[in-house]
View (cartoon, protein in one colour):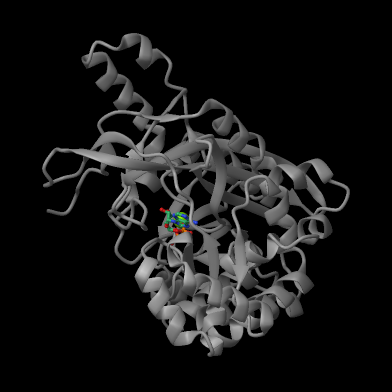
Length: 432
Ligand code: ADP
Ligand code: MG
């Protein structure tokens, strides 16, 4: 009743090799981009100005961001763990193209569990008499890659006795995913503790040098697997978050990097010239990044926003309407998109959303294995995520890597939602 297996597909799903390679090839660029945005106070301020007027959650994050900058950052080591998600858009001539859905800069999950799915799907293929196909599944171990990033940050923090703290949910639904990463750290003789915001509020403290202590233990790295949606916070949890951000511990991510992952930032990145200004002198990286962008549109007040709103209302099936939320299940499609946008088209409330072209992948067939649901063939679409890990010390990037991948697959009738939302299931790419 309490513990359940994570849902998975019976068979691996086909992924075009060119797009798979393209997604890996652009990951270091995305790492640099996220890191550059997080250091660009003016860009974040300008980009999120309209959003924070109407979205309390983003506004609260932004207030903490402003406060820690005013106080002066206590740590010059930065650790980023992100996951850039894509779908394969089927063009008019049938050629699939890699299009980014979003980049997750906080609590990007399933790197642990997906490190096990290759073995599962390899076994299934062997049972089916497909040993040759089984041997073609690519090795994948994001949990090790993520742990290497955390270990590097821990080392740079420079205290043998300090621990890594996983900041985890009140109700821990995805603990085994996190344990995979945790065990990699214990294997490297790095101690890990698991705490909730509530524990930080009750037992966390800073010393004169802003070193973070939990129960008397010094914390070198805080790895957030929580704190990305409004329901994670009450007043005490916000205070705990502020304490962590002010501290000398390396934060994964720091609050600026969390803000860099907002949907509003994603939309602004697609404006001509923005990538160039954020990554000066890196024309090739800019071109690789831009090639993955779908159409993204601002609904800010003014003529441009009016025009975009009218366009979406006239043809809702072409678009997805996205609020500044994470975790799946928040986007609006089709008729619902039209109704909501019609209601708020003349109100500043519309600026809490962005509009995006809807990606339309070619469906494939698979079985989705979920506890207590009947086994049946479904028409499915997949979303490929690439994990990125980087560590910066002052101005120097000391690590910048792609750390593995995640394939999630869902039935076509579900427009939205990931694995945690109970819609998508874990899969393994079969590169074709
Ligand atoms: P969240 O932060 O909630 O994960 P996403 O932007 O990843 O938000 O959207 C959630 C899900 O909605 C995605 O996993 C994908 O299945 C679907 N989705 C999002 N954007 C698009 C799009 N442009 N076209 C088609 N499906 C989309
Ligand atoms: Mg998502």
